[in-house]
Length: 185
Image (tube, rainbow, N blue to C red; front, side):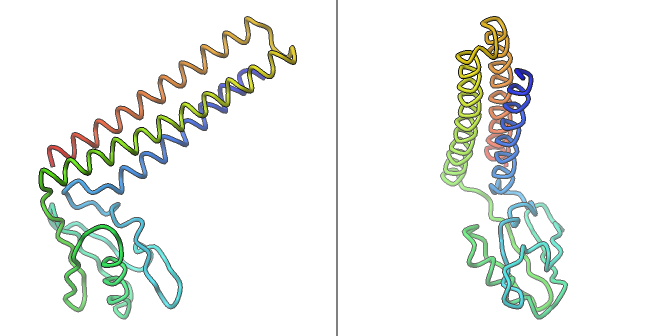
């Protein structure tokens, strides 16, 4: 039963880290990266669908994204979706493809983005600590109900703390890597 608590905590912490990975992938770092368009939804025949389902996204140059719609009639809808997103990008529509030039980041913008990365990382740390707290609360209930001994309680407590420390170290590594990408980009 106690190994289940550790496994469950580890699984939930991994989910928190996966969410952070996805959030960090969506943060623009001054280089062309198709993942910055992952949250863009295009109104396609009255239904909002992800951009990557109605067009191919290529990176012909380091700071250029080229979007080629599968259906040329959706070109204006794609352009509108990009303009409506909060990405701050200006699509250039030439009638068959849309080009997005990723602007060079200013020092001020880099600081803003680094702050956003820090905020996302802190939210993940909080989520990891909440998982730890839930696991410990469950374990304390088991101890009160005499389902686990004092020794088992302390062993599992140590295991949960090790898993927590590892998860927070992973969060810190991800955040540091993204901040480095932003400051060097």
